[in-house]
Amino acid sequence: MTASRPRSFSRGWLLASCVPTLLVLGMAVSVPSASPRSPQVATAQVPEMPEMPGMAHAAGTSQGLARGLAAEQDGYRLDAATCSVPAGRPTAYRFTITGPDGTPVTDFAVHQTRKLHFYAIRTDLTGFQHLHPGLADDGTWTADLAALAPGTWRLYADFIPNTGPHAPELVLSRTVTVPGRATPTPLPAPTDSTTVDGYTVTLHAQPMAGAHQLTATVSQDGRPVTDLQPYLDAYAHLSAFHEGDQALAHLHPANTVNGDHGGPTLTFQALLPEPGNWHVFLQFQTAGQLHTAELTLHVD
Image 1 (cartoon, rainbow, N blue to C red):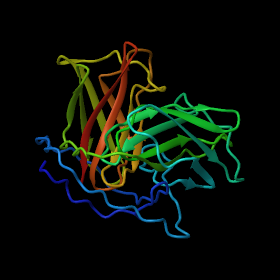
Image 2 (cartoon, rainbow, N blue to C red):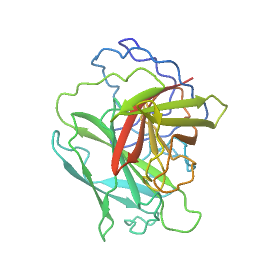
Image 3 (cartoon, rainbow, N blue to C red):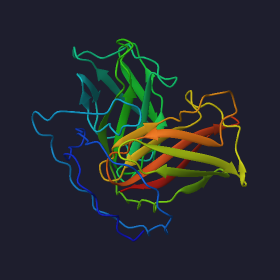
């Protein structure tokens, strides 16, 4: 990978800070061979533009579809009191999800063992956090963010309103600014394997039109790992963010959970809809410890 990032492909509308947008679906993923990591360079950020009046919000509701670039969908809205959080120290970020009637929602369905999943990522796709906020009786959520580096961050709320068996899963987001001098980190070059905490994670993608299969294998010292523990009711949790617009795709393996006997192979059904680079965070648990492996995939 050279010092400059790959040319971005066409995207949906740009968005204003604290006001997100729409994503167009359809493509497949391939994993090229690894290349050397680029040297760190400072890249200018493109100013975000206000959302146009009457713009429709859309987001996939099936697991594996990239979404999360809108603050509002289907009458539900992510509201927060601030568009800025301090740098360098933990922050309690408070927000509400208002429903179609305009009042804060207090009844959420449990999915993947939680009522709401919360993600944070900086515009250069660094600083990933996956949290589970607490909910107050008045509908206020509190996400305990670890210290954030200066720059622009996108914060996502993933939830299902408890309105019935067919209620859709929604992912809403807003951006926040962290004051200070931001030093962008270049995205690592695409690769199919990475190591974290002594575990090697290898991804295998099969290019297909539309949905595709993504397989991950976990090994340690060259031996297959077969003692993965359930994490959020699955043997892994995969979050992928698109370089440029920060579209989110998250998926869970289709493997049946059978106690602490997961691995070494995890199979996902995925759709990463835009061409370009996606930064992937694969979380899995062994012996009570959560591991987060990260690498870059390239979508043609």
